[in-house]
Length: 494
Image 1: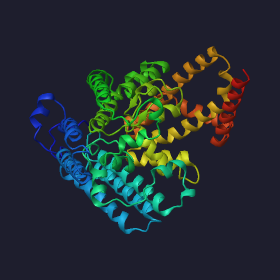
Image 2: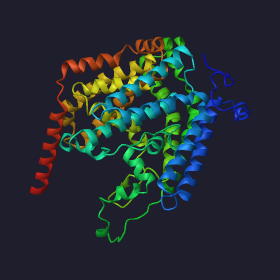
Image 3: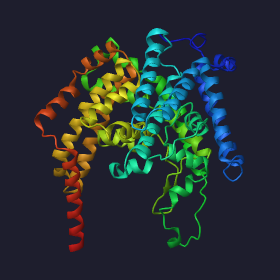
């Protein structure tokens, strides 16, 4: 049952904007969310211009970011924001009291355990609501920050350098953060409402004014005729992403409203539409569900960029990039020709977190464990588990097809183009099929949808895994390296 905007016990944040909520016909929690993000955008501009590292100390910047973040959390979520503060303080205590050999384990168990308890209580005990903008979102982002920082502290202090991978060594934290640094990293106003997750070392470098220079030191500027490192402005990236945000909002208010997800499980539609029509409409409905994510994630990225955070480097043409914290790459998503490419460009920062705390560290079955952790992190709705368990089979089947078949279609441009077209269609349809339960949430509609589609993707995945040999990723990397070596040899001979 859809909730009314004026239900008091579900509108937990400030009621200051209640008249605006009634005027627009939009739930108050969503109005508060957008208002806080817009105010955060203004605060970010002010932060970059008047509290820059050259004008204010790191302590002042940390304090400002923390105080405003706490205020935004209370404004949006009211007393529910206490859960955020409790988790942060508990894990700061673990950071300082637990042995360095166990700090990552304790932090992970406590953070994920507390998040899961909140997911269970808000849904099944207090019936907080289904499609609401609530405190669980910030709690999920903070769980990412808590666990990743704990692992990075463990890597930096509790492990030898030769035991770390290149990525772990780069992100390892060799000194435990102070209370102010910890609170600022977890609760800063730029990411408290909608993220994104970012690495502790990048955030501290930003606060201390080393962020841009840290990303430029590897570029040989003197060889390009530059005597000193530049100071790139984020305004180009900010304006570009604001345009994407506005376009996403327009699409949400028009396209999304016209294609509700519930239509694909209505009996009338299922009984009258053909299989191909149902499959095609599933793709359209899943496309219609994306603009709200494009809007929220791009706006969050804009806020960080406006504050001067998010610089990722410069390309070979000398163009500056501000996508360090970007959560999606829309072009790569919509043109993805493999399940992996799609996943790698959707919710990018969460994918990076899963890789760093689970996939790279799992002794066995890293793909399955990573998908299961992702499902648990998202919540306890059955639809999440339908999606991520299906995603395990999709990933393994797509990997098997690619490793066994792709080499036969890259010998000519025509074959390669045909292969890309087919794999694009299959990827987009398979993703729509996989994520539909994520949107439907409950068991009954998810089963009803899959039953109407004859569970065809599940069956195809099982057949692929039974018929095609699954080559290890190590084997695939060796084959790719050999192909590259052969290609370079042929170029030299020519």
